[in-house]
Length: 98
Image (cartoon, rainbow, N blue to C red; front, side, top):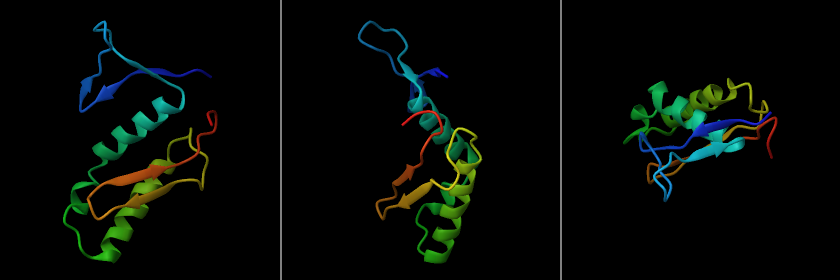
């Protein structure tokens, strides 16, 4: 199944050279949806300046469970890595797109 969505960057439409709204397709749509789900979850602010490794691990587990709720993700493939810089990387396999 082909999925198409508008490309949202920093809460705004990303426009191409002709000022048309940019589009995403397939796995990129899933990634964008998950990114928005994580942002809207409220789980990120508690990670800011968190030093307790147990608390960080608990929040990361909650984020992984949140991502796994997406039916387009292969269960058991979600991995989230939190860096000391404050960035997190989310990895997962999609069911329909490689």
